Length: 304
Image 1 (cartoon, rainbow, N blue to C red):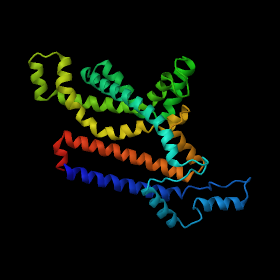
Image 2: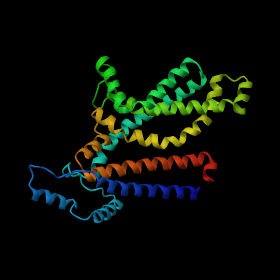
Image 3: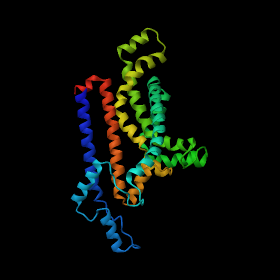
Image 4: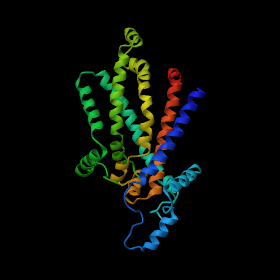
């Protein structure tokens, strides 16, 4: 088990390193100048580039950035005067995490429940209805679904506020939009897993003993049906806890997503780098934890 975990940790570290390197050089390909301003003199612009090290060769900038990164220094934002990237992440991440955690709890519970119902009513109208919802959840991106939900629930029916952050009602709409894709994916995966366990001997034995269908599902089918869903948890947890760039911007939520969109618009290089690396490291960490958990649950995984 120690060797298995060690291999996974090395792969995770290498992934973060490659991500940081690729992001740094791809960022240099973005057209534009973060300090270009007709109202500012050329001399001042040159001083600004010198202050942030943009006047140095790209290779030197890369080595300097990676050294600072090893010490946890992500630099200062070019547009948020006097604020470090770490400070911005420290301020914005709890907002994204709160939204993501709320969305995750809803999407996991609803997705698993829908999958169980689809399997129990296979070939009947509840199965077809829920699968249509699942297909729509996968097919419709947040940028399309968000305005529709905002119009129906916020403008037409006036049930929920269309934007803002803080109250429970303000959390419901963005959490639903953010988690619908996860609900759809879990519904399909859980349905397939439940149907696969239906033909297993232990399920047939439980049914032959006369156990009620509810007990057969909860005691015998549910646990084994959840195993194939575990590998997907890493990406799902990272995705919803970090928030959605589109959803946060759409609902005016001051999380990491909104800062990331602003950083690209303003060509704020340190903030772009810092948020990308933070998100990537978080995603890799979640996948690492899920891999370790999966290895503990299924010893066969550790033998591969």
